[in-house]
Length: 354
Image 1 (cartoon, helix red, strand yellow):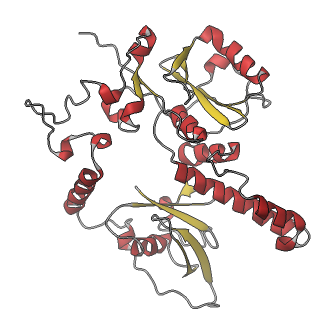
Image 2 (tube, rainbow, N blue to C red):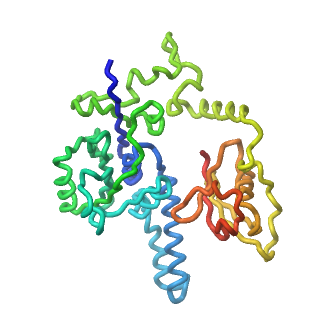
Image 3 (cartoon, rainbow, N blue to C red):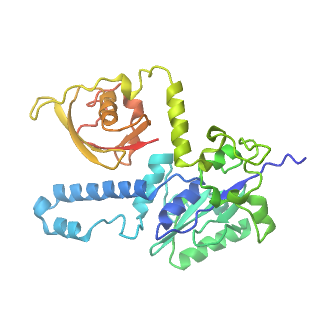
């Protein structure tokens, strides 16, 4: 039996005008970004731009430029879901700590051979798509294509030049992208209908299979000899229904011991300081359910108390991730720091279930 490692290629297809979302997910080879998470980043960028204009334009929030900017709506996402390059850059930086410079930027494309670059994001007008190196081969992962298309090393430089001559802006990630998929566990990071077996793509098979129709996908996943599915806990997460996932989460929570000292439940939610109390600060929240809240805290409160507040607003036992700053970063490592030391006074904190 061959011991050659099998690779799979992740290729999300176009939905509405969410090509920016698909380009990012195809670049990182996982379903990492949702339209909602990118829209949140767009909203933060818009607010930062407005805050800058209010602070620096004569007339502040009543200035002609500020009012015009308000009337124009978001400059980082339009009504059809097309995101700006700044949204894509912020998303990559906050989630994977990856930069996305223009390939023509000084010190980028002129310092390295194009075939040594891990991945590209290309844009013209309102369309985005990704080109990604997987198993030392480049794939065009344009979400409008029926399937990934191989680009040879020999043709890659010419392809990049042709795109730029056609009016495309080309951005790149030099290295350190998440590794390509080579295991069942890694495939759970993406949606099953978008995984393509690399050997089928290389052979040019017209009926190349995705993971969704792979007859071997259930091997080792609890499939019984009679062909019926095993219990929910034996399935890969991507194949479970929402009810099965909820049951699994509830079962896991029952097995958990007393929360550790870093859990949000280990921090006591102190009484909210009255308006005008010395040392009190306001923090705004976008809660995991999408609602908004504003609360006052003492600057000396630990960041863990913020987690306790968000937990008090959420139903169920799901774990919570909180992000703050620009680009938004996970603040869980700061739970034992004070709100003042963590520089969270006046911040907008975004929460989500994980």
